[in-house]
Length: 373
Image (cartoon, rainbow, N blue to C red; front, side, top):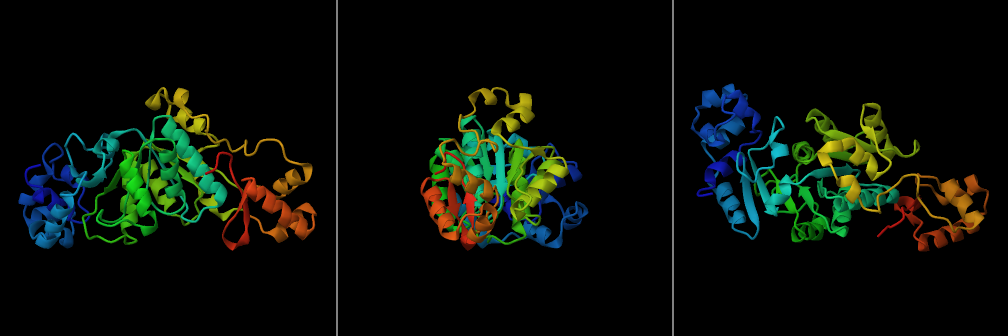
């Protein structure tokens, strides 16, 4: 790219996307031609005054900051119509005209599975996301998510543990990492052949309104979106809805009816999302699109019906049955099992040391999946 400034100008024009090219009858033309249009012509495309002003009178300091960022190692601006622009993303109606990328640009065009869910999952939900990501990565899929705490981070880490590729789409400029707690994870993603991606220029903070825009890239890059633990108001449901609107598959892992983190997934299933119990359910649904993936799937593929192996004493089996698959307090387990409180506390300690349960926020206990990390 000889001079990135015209493309950076488009990237800094909020709300501008490929759909505006179609409205202007420029679907096969360079988006840079928009920069030569009059205010009236741009307004006729449905662009707001802020967007038009950013195109006609771009901020020189912002453009200079973007150019400085691009001078860093393994940083690129991937533009509409270029060979590196991901073909699946190009098919969505509101595809971004430019993507800021740090890492391996070729990763954007790999077959990808989006894994999204709660920022505050149960231990079981986090383990489930990790194992599904491991299986997907071992089967040849890249894992795409939003670098958020919780399910997103578990998905990224599961892919890395399997030696696979993962992509993180951020809701801010790539000159910062959000959340900061996952800065180390972001470095690992790039180091292992993945990429950090954003359609937002440098200096743009992680504001609430940026995340739906980020989510449409996550789903747009992916052949399908898997939702693991989502409350009814979860942003993950936005990603799932966008995936459906984009003609992509939507998968959801069911949970206990007593777990509020499962209600969003149950709603998705009622609305037509595919209920997933094992990774094989995903490969079967994607069918010929991902031919051969089932044969390559990891033996670690999670199975919601195969949670723990044999070998427990009867009392421990009774306590695990009382725990079920939703977080529970010691008082609840005492009432359900009929065991004394000190016995329950002692047994939970043994189960925790054995990796079969974990204590989470609020003093609640939750099952763990086999193969945890």
